[in-house]
Length: 385
Image (cartoon, rainbow, N blue to C red; front, side, top):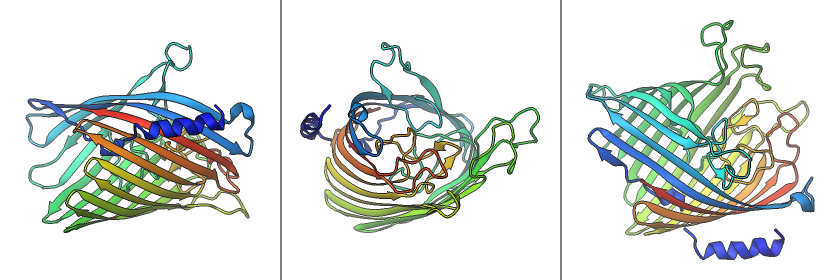
């Protein structure tokens, strides 16, 4: 698709704009069993230029879909529940649940369904707000953009969490340990590479303002040190990531506005004598009125600021990415126009602009190509139940 066609589709999608972040699921409940899920149709119109781009690989139009279906069951034992969910999925680490249309017919990758969640949770009735969980479940992460942890990724392990409200204030926290590799017969107990994670988040309501602050730590652990174990060697060894976010939201009648910031930094070493690019920053402004919402985001994301394990990046993949998986090592802008129609349907149109940062890929293989410019128009239609 040439430039004129790309621009024309941008104008056409604006006319049917709407926001997946605005959609709210309905949760169908039968007794102690609650069902939930969603379907998304997505259209990506991508164009790129700069380093390594030719006329043969400078654009694409890609219709996609995502399907998720799950349940939560509250057992007769007070406080004990378990949940599970299936999802379309294109592989590890799980941050690409969208599948291309016609893949099952065209002889390419078929439509795959994976176990997305499977967990047991216990919230003791004698300790309000406290809970423990084991299995495969969502990471309770304090951020607003998914830049430094993609919510599509459901890590496997165990955690202790806390979530409680005190008047106009809410405190959430968790401490978890997650496995990143398979434990072999010759390994010691839990010798497989792992990831420890923690966070603390506070939210306070001071009408008409709501303020949220959060900090987190994520520590990728190479249990074998510099030597191999059953799941190999981490290129950067053990890496520590520290980050957090801040957000202020103002609501007056049917109008609301918010401004927020996310950041993340690591101690990963990219290469001797080279810029380490370990800092990532995201700023976001949102404005909404009833069923409409606008958003702008600015991204300056260093190559190793995003949590990663070997070549797997745990970042969102909405920005177009030359190397697949989560996006990192770039400067970018995101514009959204969203529309909510009832409780169950929402739509949005987005514009993504990105450019690979200088000196990328000196110490890792997943960052965007330095000097490459990427543009994406994305249309999302979302149905939740």
